[in-house]
Image 1: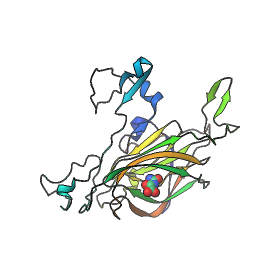
Image 2: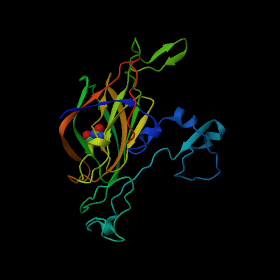
Image 3: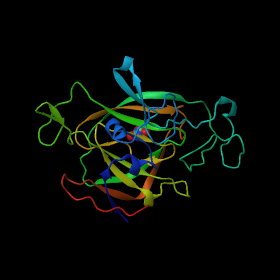
Image 4: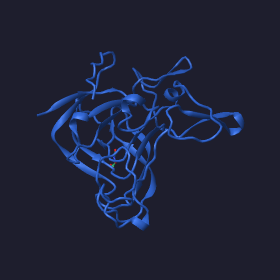
Length: 255
Ligand SMILES: NC(=O)N[C@@H](O)C(=O)O
C-alpha cells in the first residue's frame, strides 16, 4: 500500500538520527565553544581562529566513520557475538558479513540532474554499511541566477530561495536488516547545506529538485560488491510530497 510522507525543512536536530547537517549559519546560531584544544563529540560547535585571525574555523562538523576493520582483521566475520574483533558500530544496527579488503577515502564529484516527479516516488533505498557518506553542494561557474524565487542578487544581498534545493529521504534499519519504513522521513535541503548519512542509514539516491547541481562527496570504499553499497526495493513506493512555498507544514507524529 502506497504511503505518503511530507518533506520537512532540514534541521540539525530533526536529522540527527540519520546523519549530520553541514550548515555554517545554523552552527553559528547555536551556543558555540572556543575551547583552546580540539575536543570532538560534544554538542556545541567548537569555533577557533584561523588564517592569522582573518578566519574562523568550526571543527568536527560531521562524524566521519569507516567501520571496516583494518587488514589484520579483514577476514573475520563481523557479528555482535564476535567479542573483541568487531569494529565499533555506532548508529548502525546492520550486521555486515566478512570484510574482504581495506577501504580508501573516495572524494568525488556528483553532477545530479533534477528529478521532476511530484510527489516524488521513493521506490528503493540504499545504504553504505561501513562508511559515512557526505554530500556537499558546490557552486559552479555555469550556475545561472534564476529569476522568480531563486538565488537572486537583490540590492547586493543574495535572496536565498529555492533554485537549488535537494531532497534527502532516509530511514533507519529494521530488525529484519531492511529499511524500517515507519522511520522514513524526507527533508528539503538548500544548497548552502550539506548532509551526511551515518553508516548503515538507508537513504534514497540523491534527488535534486530544481537545477542540475554538483556535489562533492566523501565515502570510504573498497570496490567490493555488497560492501560499499547495498540497495533494497521497497514493498510499495512512498510518495514524498514537497510543499510549495507558503504551504503549511503538517505536524509530525513523534517517532
Ligand atoms: N547516495 C547517493 O546518492 N548515491 C551513491 O551512494 C551511489 O553510489 O549512487
